[in-house]
Image 1: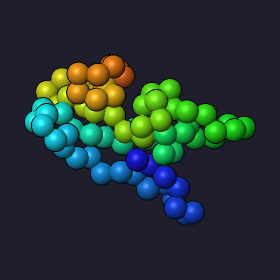
Image 2: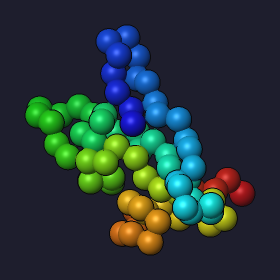
Image 3: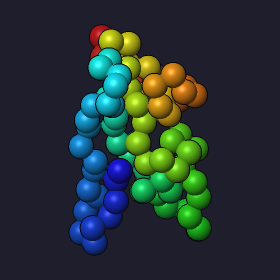
Length: 78
């Protein structure tokens, strides 16, 4: 998951989801489950404080976990 190392944003590497060959775990882009900026820390509304999402490789569908609540779909360039 993304975090601030004092100089830059460090992102988590994309990797497989064990037991689900068509899914991969991707970095949400939030700061360790918290939304960037604002007056006070707030739970990320996209990943619900996980810090990562699961992407279905064939369709680009995003979910909190394979078979779990959907979290949108990645935009695909035409």
